[in-house]
Image (cartoon, rainbow, N blue to C red; front, side):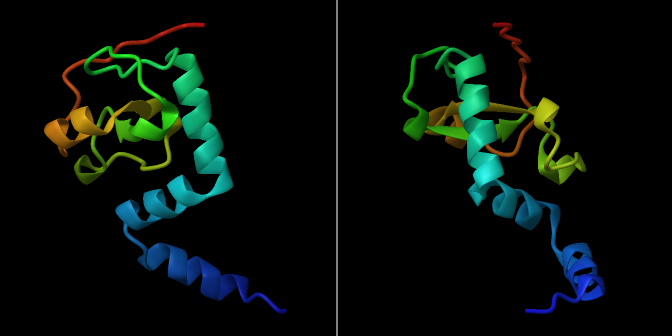
Length: 101
């Protein structure tokens, strides 16, 4: 199969930041990054500080994508439980807990 790289670049330019993030999150690299964040946070939701299983977490951004941040900047990401992510919505995080392991 021949790949037209110019076409791929054009397609990438048309995709929204949210679409770029969704593609990355569903990829192997995205899943590995989520697992790394989960381990770094010792399995804790940084919002409610509850111990949660990785399957009950979602990646969130300290600075929301809608505010113009790079959607793939892992230094702007952490994992929180689904419940907290639904409550937080697209607002900026009011906390920035760092867990060093």
